[in-house]
Image 1 (cartoon, rainbow, N blue to C red):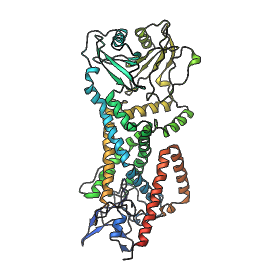
Image 2: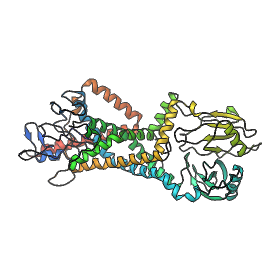
Image 3: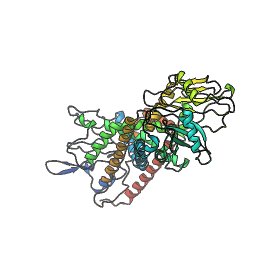
Image 4: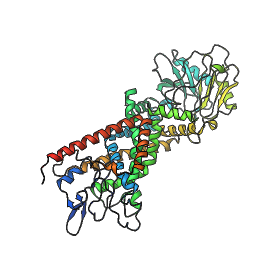
Length: 542
């Protein structure tokens, strides 16, 4: 996202640059007598190679972060001009510094998250093609009882235990009989696909999660979440999610607060620009359209992260927004809260089946439908001391997620849970997570996710390109350059600085990986400042 950067003649002492770049703008501006480099003009003097080096890698302001001189804005200017001494002119250098460091140093993590997220969004449709033999069958004349379909799955896999059944959700779709056993990986189920019209077993595949992810989507989901490295790998995704909202909102503020001669340039890339200015225009306008989606993905991704996720769960519970669960305990005293994030990592129970009377799965489904649980459903079979649990699984908005627990002896309702009765926070959490997973609006949701991931990839690449174009032009090498002059934070009024510091500390505590990495960025910034000062002291005067 950009700094203030003009398309007309540039007055001396103007601050020009970008961020996920955050660097000074080195594009040229034509005049009647020659060409001026907008990133090399200082008050009263003209810099040469020194300014070029300062504008290379880590420099993001010119003139100690001073605001552009106040002057009359051209008619039709979009966005407010930051006058000298204004709140925005004081905060702007800090926004630039944070946006640049975060964008550049977190860029590798964002690239991995965006690439894996794009592949995950496309995997829903890829699964339908890759596993079409298991998922689809010719439509028959009559659907057989679920008990007959379950019996066929048991006959095909006699060493496994049936834990749940997902009846065929539509014409031409197979029934999934979920099983567990010695050969099934922990946390997974073996999904046996049964033709509902003939009870023929079409195949069996490992399945994971409440969305029934098959091997392709499971692999991509795990790669996106933890690079398939287990718990240590989750640090990558949590760090990326922790910073993405900061980079997105910081870039939005910089882009909206930038001077421009036409309001259209805020929303649409400008024509006729070249080099960095063209890249900057695309970076800013695409970022503007993507910012809301990126913030939502960042927030929902944090809900099941390792450290920030725990804090979110604590706050949500204290506010009375924890997600309720239906209790299948036949003895109410034995009921307890269901551990784990709903739909994420909670496995099917494997307790022994009850030895008492059982009305059977067909009558249980009929009783659930009489209780208002209909449509696309999932049936969890009873275990010792537990009844049937039958849940609606239609996550496409408007969602149908009611659930009932039934006594296997006579089919009476032991407990019921209506989605309408969920706390507001629980509903919002469910909507956010389902949207993040691409199941809230079906194909439309998946296409939006794919578009956001493409946008994120482009934003990171454009930002890195702008940084690359700021490298010293003489030697054509990658240089760390000179950081912005020290003490820009001292220009922020104390009445604004103290609340800002307190808010930063609070956010850093609540989102630990954000706070830790921010301290690392500050340490790098201080180190580069010392190196730059040492270099200046040893450089002979011109």
